[in-house]
Amino acid sequence: MYMLKVEKLSTKIDNKVILDNISFELEKNDMLTIIGPNGSGKTTIVKSIMGDIKYTGNIYLNEKNIKKIYISDISKYVGVLMQNHNLEFDNTVYDIVSLGRYTYIKDMFGNLNDIDRKKIDDAMKLADIENLKSSSINNISGGELQRVFLALVLAQDPDILILDEPTNHLDLKHQIDIFDILKKWSLQEGKSIIAIIHDLNLAHKYATKALLIKEGKSISCGDVKSSLTRETLKETYDIDIFEWMQALLQNWK
Amino acid sequence: MLKKIKVGKYVFIIGIIIYLVLFILSISVGSVKISFEQTIRVILNMIFNIGDITDIPETIVTIITSIRLPRVIMASIVGSSLSLAGAVMQGLLKNPLADGSSLGVASGASIGATLAIALGITLPILSEFSVIVTSIIFAFASLFLVLFVVKKIDSKMSTNTVVLAGVIFSMFASSVSSLILAIFSNDTKKIIFWTLGSLASSNLSKVLIILPIFLICVLYILSKTSELNVFQIGEDGAKYLGVNTKKVKVGLFIFSSALVGMSVAMTGNIGFVGLIIPAIVRMVVKTDYKLILPFSMMFGASFLCLTDLISRTIISPSELPIGTVTSLLGAIIFVCILYNFKKRKEV
Image 1 (spheres, each protein chain N blue to C red):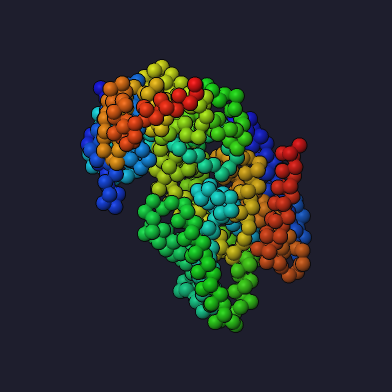
Image 2: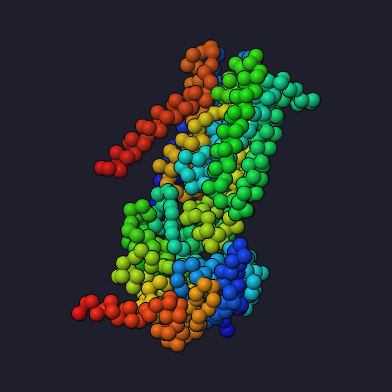
């Protein structure tokens, strides 16, 4: 059974084709990475799934057409970790993480119940930010802030987590940290992940499936071993990335 | 979060006590001095029908029930409306400099009032409330005009477009008001005095008009505290967490603008309250709207009762326009609090 199925997804903006016949499927424990140059339509795929833009084709969430599901219900199944976080006021880390429970709160005054509190604690533990609980958002580092927002989407307890360049601006150590957290979460809880990743080594190490796109068209899609190869990368980026990376590594000798 | 709520409770109780003291003080202080005891007894008798007030002179009872009590209630309603609307707008527009009139309703209401005074419009049936009704109509007309234009320009109604449209409309509306002022120079003094705001004309029937609108708006806004909390991480973030962002946003715009439009119509343009009270409240209770909104209402009510008391007693028997007192006093209080707050943080 598929958790998410995208079928012949196409979009146009001002008569320009942004996505052309993209299809893929996502099963339990999968981590699908979407790879492609800037402007190839990666973020547009995410926006289509979340119903932010018009598209043709079909997207099924748990075998139900996503267009027929209310946005407040979609948020129970799909969580999105965004690229940029802009906060104006002096929130604490706990405040921000607890916002992830919004969609479950039935209490008129928006109070959290015991389940909510447990999910928040678990998410903070997994993201390793328990010690920051009452820190102000303005006094923590960029890497910590990213983990706070990761904890927020984990507290949301979705079946599918969508990450748009989750490790942007982070150093290598923090990138590895975040992917380790995600991998652990997906295997432990039986969840699946869609991640737009620019770092090809990270993508290759952590993803189970890959979708390579160029100018809105799918170059290859499927198991990471067979679809993320030297040849497909060459076709996607128009340069021999493998050769380039080998040359880079030579510099270390 | 638990600790925060406890501290909040403590401050809230002190706030309520301060408000009650100001409430009683505002009723007893004035050209005719009334003792606290008499004030409390008359109010209790009036509201709960307890106690015997036959020994209190009838003139005093009349002063309390038909002049001072309506005025204090009006001050409380307007003060809490302006602060509540300010807190909501600052949250929605993610801008600490926003206030309830950011969408241009206050300026719209001003056109209405200026026109009504200058042209001497008297409505049939509602002749006593001609200025009020005209400015309420103009406030709502301008709100819907702004929202309509925003919708046409940007179907997503992003906050930047809303702020821009609001600012442009406010400027336009102010020039229209000035134009009317320039043409009908006979009524200049009356119009300017209205613009600066005054609670002097408050009476029981005005309170009864404003009260139901006030309660409806407040109930709606207080039911949206979770959504306002989620809005803090941005509109897209809020949407992905399951908030129907457009509906909530438009609803909050309409209800908080209604509060402001109605307040301006009743008492003229009382500036600064909607900006400064939420800013002070944020320093005390930080970022949880479950606390920010009720605190803003409470402090706003107290603040306007206090400034009204000052404006009508300081140069008694004449009155200062309350708008000037709120701005003067508000700026001083705000700077003091900001100074102490920053200093304490540095230590």
